[in-house]
Length: 433
Ligand code: HAX
Image (tube, rainbow, N blue to C red; front, side, top):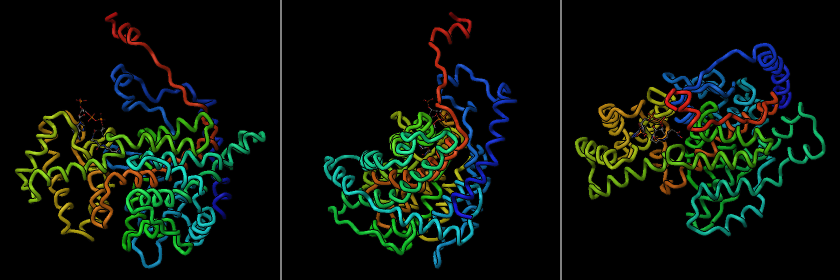
């Protein structure tokens, strides 16, 4: 079966489950909200539904029920390479099924046909001031393509609600196909004198991205691993939630993806991956290029904390253990770059930071998250412009966000509209009015 047919069957089977829950069990409570949660960023409030991934605080993320090692092991692999096709992962996220090799290759070819960055996007990006952050360029590039939306055309022609997911899927496939090219274009425009490398029609999503970046093997596998690991982290994180929220107004995926990139660009979220490298570079500079000892590293960690800053790459709003995405990247480093000096610093931080955060007693989770490790691999393979790192995260996150939007449309999720209260109302509820 094709992707569309597989998805169609899944959606038909799923709709009665959602409608039954709403119609017959709509009043069943799954969460209570405290004053602390209302002021504190809705931490722990169960109010979103997704079947695409689930984040267990102790175990970490599962994509469609599969752990990261399981996902990487069972998806069809690119011949001669260690990592699976990103396209196979898209299939898994969308349908919940592990695609066959033939299905994966069909999607590889489908996405190839949808490639090609419009000239007006290139012109718009070239017109931006040269100090524009790559995330701002990425967001602008995506929203500039909004005029391509198939959903908007179909909606304006009176498409019925049950069919909203179909042109949304078209939009998602079109945008997924263009994101590696958009990211590579921004990289080469900003850091490589606008010397662009044309796409290679023989290569898959990850392989073609590495090619357009101008970075040789095994960077293709790094890209595949990176995009898969960052694809989804259930729905409550800032980028995923923003994508869902914006799309809930029936804004098309170009608007939603651009907005989710804006959320990802914050230093407490995706930008943490560039901050880790910036922080380590700062430490090295202070040491005059010498390798910091464990004692020195501890001093720098305390210095950062005492100046009121966070240690980037550590802590998490949901996780309470080391992030399995961190571990997967650490395993990659141990295998491919065990002697890299930056990897050694990052590994030293893994030893040094958690006990310090525990001693400080503020962070609920002292363990490293995905961002602590990801910059090292990029740095090792020659991508040293660390303010570009979050764009890579964004290409990955778009896989999960847009898969979710297709399902939001398929299940008819309404416009999101939580209720706010005033401070006086909270005081009254607390009995201190
Ligand atoms: N360094 C120093 N202090 C930290 C900390 C860290 N790494 N992590 C948490 N804390 C502090 C918080 O700032 C907070 O302090 P205040 O009470 O003074 O406000 C306190 O510990 C309690 O916070 P928390 O409940 O443990 O954590 P939150 O759910 O509020 O925030 C964050 C989660 C990820 C934002 C937080 O851990 C953090 O700022 N980490 C560093 C930045 C980072 O690595 N972000 C990326 C996270 C993963 C991700 O989303 N990637 O995209």
